[in-house]
Image (cartoon, rainbow, N blue to C red; front, side):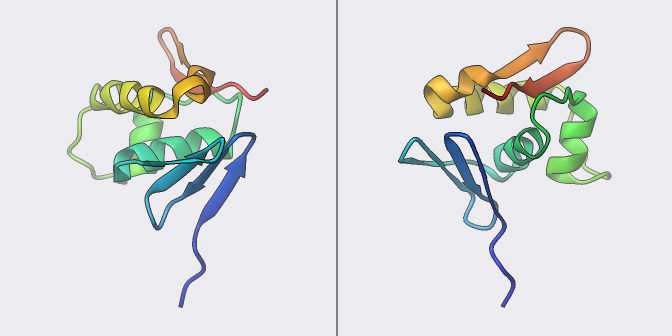
Amino acid sequence: MAAARVMAHERIIIDDDARKAIVTGRCISVTPMECGILSALLHMPNTTFSRQELLNYAAGLDSPTSERAVDVHVASLRRKLGVAGERIQAVRGEGYRYVAE
């Protein structure tokens, strides 16, 4: 049996296998793509990722998904995470980053 892939950063705990996140004690469901994007951002906070890098991390190199779909998933993540979602910042012309406290 493989170990669950769980990551905690500040107020967010994410369980990749169960595809859920716990934000300040509140459990939220995330899609596989949202989970992958959030995992990438939390794994390297304060690092700016291009949309393509986030897409590769979340869906794999040969994903047919458009880079612009990342914008939709990030917007959804921000809503679901509430106040913690404000830490996901758009970097104009580059992509997104999670700003650590």
